[in-house]
Length: 392
Ligand code: ATP
Image (cartoon, rainbow, N blue to C red; front, side, top):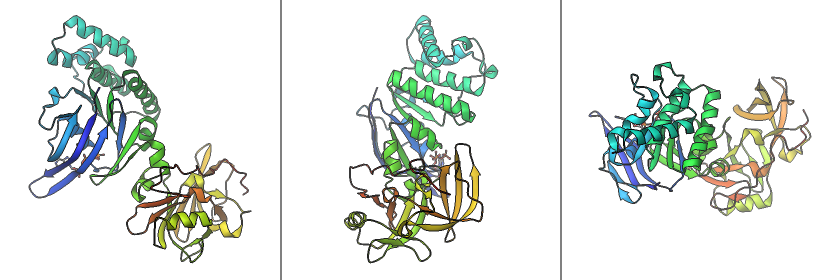
């Protein structure tokens, strides 16, 4: 096992006609045994970062260390890492046993017997003992994924690298494999770097999530931390599905958040004090998550916001309700018994603990409820959709 340090690592691609900064000054220390997941939109630099860790991509600037050793110029085979790709990259003419043992045969002095015993152990761990004599072409996507992971396990590497390993599987199998990979990680405790598009995968599997945008690190934190205390508007928007709702607001002379339309919401003196302790501005971007909005006709005017129902999507246990608030779409996640009519005017409200305010210019987070962004304190989880009687 090993820790992995990106020390001011930059990757620039020069295509001749232009230069692309794929990763910019990345500083990140991944602890020994940690499960780290990189997420971010397409082209944000996730795969490039992983490929630099694997040694498949050169590093333009900065230093990469594995267990304290600079590895910038160490070839992939000498890095003691094992990588699992989205495409599984299995040899079609070899059996599962052959695929799993092949790398070991090349890179170690182990006897055939020792290789076989490692292969069988890994196959047992992945639940594929009965597939050992089959060829990849006769396996399902999920089985091939297990073989690819098993092949990485037999290497007993210092670091596992996964590049979107589950994206070719259907939703149900993906969920199942998530659990399997988490179990393997707890059993082996090997430092793991995992790249995915899927934020649900990131939230459920990781010890810490790394969010990238345009090659730049946005936030590193535990799943709850990035969800409840997003460092900026990008993270707030990216993490969570449906995503957070945003609105440009200002703080009036007192303690009301207003916009130039129908939004007018009174917050407490404590909230205003917290906000003023971190910002001199009166202009903010307001954010609230869909599950923290309640449709409630009995709410006091000072905390009521009138909206019009555009669409109601029934998804089973919950409804997603799309509202129009001064021409902006507001998404609400409600229990399924809240089913307003399309076109109906409804009153929404939320607790101030659920409010996020961002600087209107820098887009950096200022407060999460009554806690400043800099505070170590986690915001009190706001009352959710199921915590209160809701009238409709
Ligand atoms: P995706 O989720 O779509 O795979 P990603 O976050 O993994 O995206 P990267 O593949 O790391 O993103 O790409 C980061 C940036 O570097 C993109 O702008 C991409 O076009 C560029 N890039 C990646 N590889 C090369 C290359 N070999 N030559 C030129 N540009 C490249």
